[in-house]
Image: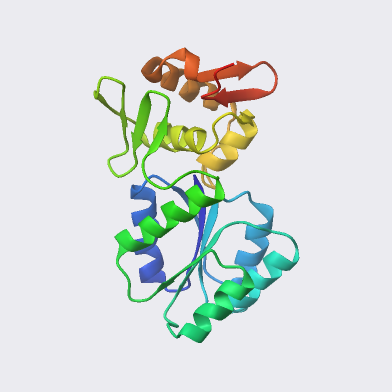
Length: 221
């Protein structure tokens, strides 16, 4: 899953960037409202963490502009402004959740996880498809016999995206856009390598190939 972190505080932004990457997300960073608004429209993010007190353009205005243009990317507002009036303004502008500073990193991660699952139409709790369960905290796969399988960072991001979109046809280019950060080498052919690795772990029947189109995860057809 690929996130955009919009935070102008360099120290906090660095801390959050590290925490989000450690939690298994591909993360791009923006430090002002004008850049964030443009990047948020251009790139296919799964979720945006948006500070309100931004230079060049306030975060609330950025969010309002996205929604006016039909950009429905999930947004978690992160701000030191904690009054209920400001929270109401944020939700009216189209925010999906609101975290006030100071906060615990684990709370932010939990809220991000919950919003991602809601936006994907998934139920809260552990990600489970057929006989496999993904432990998102430990970034491990739990197989049918309760055996645990560790995953690389890319394998984890790819499998989590698959499990949040079961039964959907996902092209290699779409998977690449949601697994890698902006400045990473996005060779879509590498996705085939990681798909084959996952098949070796979970079995070939859970990831079907549609020749020339992409992959379908968890479909029984």
